[in-house]
Each structure stands twice: as structure tokens, then as C-alpha cells.
Length: 428
Image 1: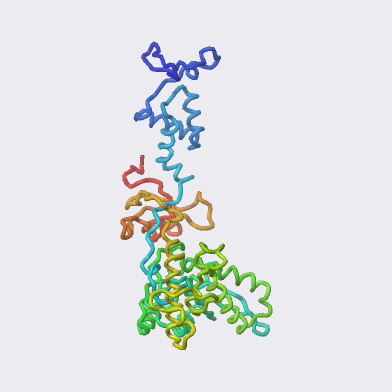
Image 2 (image 1 turned 90 degrees about the vertical axis):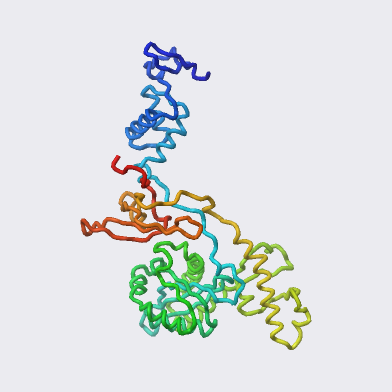
């Protein structure tokens, strides 16, 4: 055997090895051999792991061997002990993750644009009227199926301004079936100002207006707070809009007035709606990239052969409805072949992980503060999806401003780090 084991005078199995002529102590030359799966081995690793101040796998292994112990399969055994160590999870534990959820039904329907859409607000942007500087905000409406966007400017973030933006949107794009939004905690740029204004908005009044327009309203609290990835359909478009507007506003804010700003917003909307939905045919000189504008404007540089009963000659006839129908059908055919198939694969979060459970002790990630002062919380409720996987939890967190009191928060698992499982004795 590689270790050349032997039994000493006390009946202990030791490593023979090749260090007999070394001047090192006998405990280093002939360490005691321990089995991998043993409670004694686990306690020994835990002891020396704490002795080296919860350092990594190599440091722990060196400390164990320097004290006269040779554990079979020590690397994997130390790895499992460190993985279960609450202190190591506190220092270096990874944020929770779960297999990516399936796409909602609205994302895969071939339906009129903006039938299902999401809404968010962002800003502010400074404009000048005379010598005064005013703040302006934007409401972005994103179509779930065609990924088209619609931008509306608002003077304030209050109920009246938001309803006026909704009225302009519905007058332009027609009635919608469902509008989704987040809870106002994931805005970019304005921070507390946007968050406080959004909370003060009369949500009941907005919901009543939408019901009168035959539109369903899914409340702000539908998406988990601090879970921007759950509203990625519109959050990603906000980033696109801001990347264009920020550079333009920085160089032109001294000359932009209200009218110029509104014009600029509409031009940005047109630019975004001309982005390609898929780039599979980007190298094909005879193929035109599919964009949301193909559906919104029903205009194309190259008319493709029509599917079904619509003939190519109908493009040149006087029956305008047949032209429109052909172009719409052509969009959805290409949308299904080029865009929808690209949504099939999961780019990340591909494997099923352990579900967080009630009673788990976790570390709650807080933005803009060091990890060593993140609060510790306990899970009191889980929210499994239709597939049985938990992606959001409700936490009980100590309120440091009021000793003895606790706060109840709902957070996505991507904002928490597992420290102790519910079946583990936390006091041990």
C-alpha cells in the first residue's frame, strides 16, 4: 500500500511512509490513520478547523497532519465539514439559488401587442424652463410577448400623474388585459424619493380606473421586494432606456425643455423598438432581423412569402386589411421560429437545489453595507411555486433600533445565505 501502514505497541494503526530517516517528531513521521466516516474523525476536523480560525481546506488539513493524524480521503471529508460549518457560511456562504422557473403563460402567447404588459417608473431627469430646473420621470410599459416598449413622461410620481400616463398609454395602444408591476423598491436612480412617492400613491384609485377600462391589475406587492430579476422583462428595458438617455441628457440638459424632452423620449422608444429580438440570421444578407417595430408599425423593408391562404399578390392589392393581416401573420411566424425557441434554454440556475424551510437560520443580504454586519434572520414562511420549488420566503429579523422587537420581511432566496438548517441544533 502507498502508506505502508503498521501497528505500534499500543495497537494503533500508523503510516509507515518514507520519512523514517527524518529528524521530525514521530507524530509527523508516523501519523495515526483514521477512517473517513467516523464521528471521531468529524469531531477532530471540527476542532482543528476552529483552531485555525475557520480557514480553508488546505490550512485545516495541514494543521491536522502536523498534529499526528492521517485521515483517509481528508480533502473531501474536510470539504463536507466546512460546508456544514455555520461560521464558514456566515463568512463565505453563497447566496441562495433555485432552478429557474418556467416562463409565465403571457410570455409565450401569440396575441396583440401590450395585451399583457409590465409597468415601472424611473428617473428623475432634469430639464430647464427658462431659468428653472424641473424634474421629469418616465413610465415604461413593456409587452410580454413582443418585447415592445412604450414610454410616457410624467411631471410627478403621484396617483394623478400615473393615471394620466395610463390614459395616454391605453389611448395609444388600446386596452390591455393584465398589467404587472413590482412593489416600488427596485428603482434605479432616484432611490428613497421614488420609493416614498410610490408608497404614497393611492393604489385603490388606480385599480378602480383600470377596472373601468376592463383591465386587470396585479398589485404592487405581487413581486417579492428586492427581487428585480422577477421583473426582468421591464427592468432590463429600463437599463436600455437609461443607457441612451443618460448620455444624451448629460450633454443636452442645458437646452432641453419639456417639449424637447418629450420628443427625445419618443425617439428613444422608436430606437428600442427597432432592436432585434433574435440574431440567428444576422449573417444572412437576404434576411431582415425581426424587431418589435415589425408588429407595431406593420412595416418591413422586405416582404416575405405569406403563410396559409394569404397570397403574395395581396400585398399589391387594394384590400388593406389583407396586407395588415399578412404582415401580422408573418411577424408571429418568425417570432415563433426565431425568438420563442431561444427562450427554451436556461442560461443559469439549471439545477434543483435544497428548498429553504421554515426554521432555517439565514443571513440577510443588505445593499451598501459590509457583509459582517448583515442581519441574521429566521425563516417563518415559505412560498413554493407550482413546481414545488421555493423562491421567496418570509423572514423574522431583529429590529436593532428597538430592542426586543422584530420585523417581518419578504425576500427572494437570492438575498439570503443559509447558516443553519432547521434540523440542526443552533445552540450546539
